[in-house]
Length: 93
Image 1 (cartoon, rainbow, N blue to C red):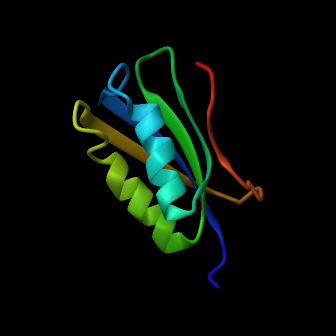
Image 2 (tube, rainbow, N blue to C red):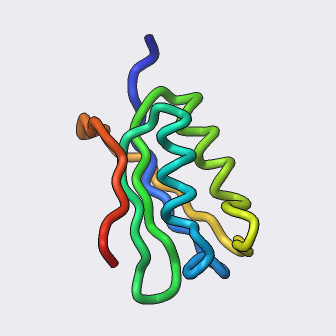
Image 3 (cartoon, helix red, strand yellow):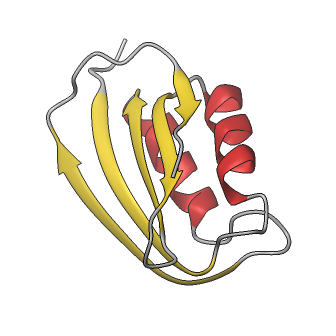
């Protein structure tokens, strides 16, 4: 099995009020990726994904479009050391 990776992601555009967090959780669970997602006060969505490299990359690729009502205008990704997260959750804003 491949070593886990951790991606810290910030998504900008029309990404709040469009089911982005819940859809991200569903996508992460389908990919077997752990982490979290939350809304930021500046209108962006922030997320952390931990898991197998290919699964994390698929989730990052999914974030480039997000759910149907989203309009993603920017995506920033920073790779960090994995912390051993075991589940995915939506955090309160």
